[in-house]
Every structure is written in C-alpha cells, then in structure tokens.
Length: 157
Image (cartoon, rainbow, N blue to C red; front, side, top):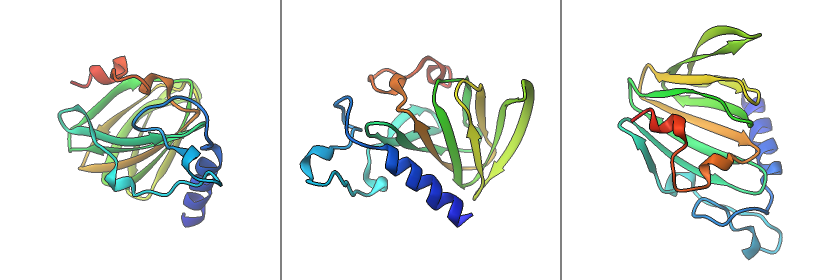
C-alpha cells in the first residue's frame, strides 16, 4: 500500500509543473530556480462547500490535489468530469455510487483504501463516518478555477 501511495504522489508531483492560471490555490513555481515548491497542506485555506463539507486544495500546471473534510452524513452529489480522479481515504469511510462496465455499482471505501475514476465516469459520495478524503485530479479541474462552486457542489447545499 505504501508503494502505491508513493507511486501515486510521484505521478501527481511529476505532472504538477508550472503553467496556467493565477489564483490563490496555484503554486508559484516561478520564485524558485528549480521549480520545486514545499509547503504544509494543513495550512492551506479551507473552502466551505456546504454544511459538513470543506476542502483544501492546490493546483499546478497539469494536476491538482484536494483534501475533502466530510462530516458524517455529508453528501457530494452525482457528477462527472473530464479528469481522472484518484481518491485515497485517509480517515473514515464513504459509500460511493458509480458505474462499473456501464452498470451501477456501490463501493464502501475506508481508511487506507484507494478508488480510481477514469474521466467522465459518474460518481457520488456519502460520508458514513467523519472522513478525510485526498483527491488527485489530472488534468486540473477547470471548473474549480473560478470563485463559483461547480453546479453539482451547489446541489449539496
């Protein structure tokens, strides 16, 4: 499992190279000669999505990472996007509704487990416990770059 996580983070870090938009969550690779950026994820600002859901996130040129803090009972509605999503549950447990080979499928994903969604595969989350979810999206979620919440997250309010 540790090797999988190291590989996951290595791939994400390798794809996160400078280019793109300027925003509070964008890493500034231009202030260092070799482009390496170091920071504490815990110190990133928290966006309140709805009652029981907050997120901390950053992006670089080709990918992004996000913590979703989910209170028990929180729900992220069904949605899809043109990005691969790698979800690692650090703490807690979620029920995920998605599709496998075109058929509806539910997964219970707990601490230490990973689920990968290819691009454009619908999925939704229900927090069965207080949960910390780490998501990696490749490429950057363009719908997250404005100050507006994506339509599906507005439904969670």
